[in-house]
Length: 81
Image 1 (cartoon, rainbow, N blue to C red):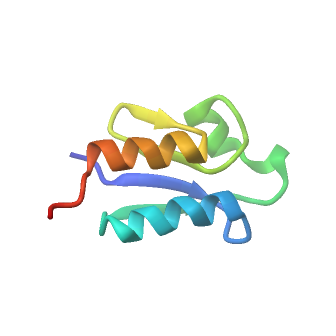
Image 2 (cartoon, rainbow, N blue to C red):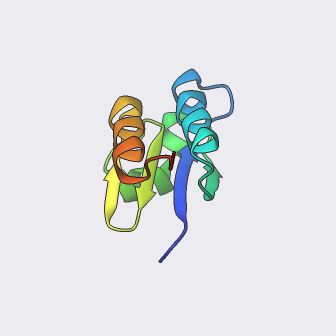
């Protein structure tokens, strides 16, 4: 299975929320940093159809809202007690 990819900007608070959840769940993922300028975000636009971040790609699943991403991660990768 391909490694998860997170399209990210380091100064983005929403991206930080997703990175924090990925860390909490101890999930491996690749970070793809995108430019600040929306018109330069061609790679994330090709993947998700829009230029906003964060965007998470997990196999065939593409999510582009931080709350949807976090909910998806919690449901798909629950922490073992």
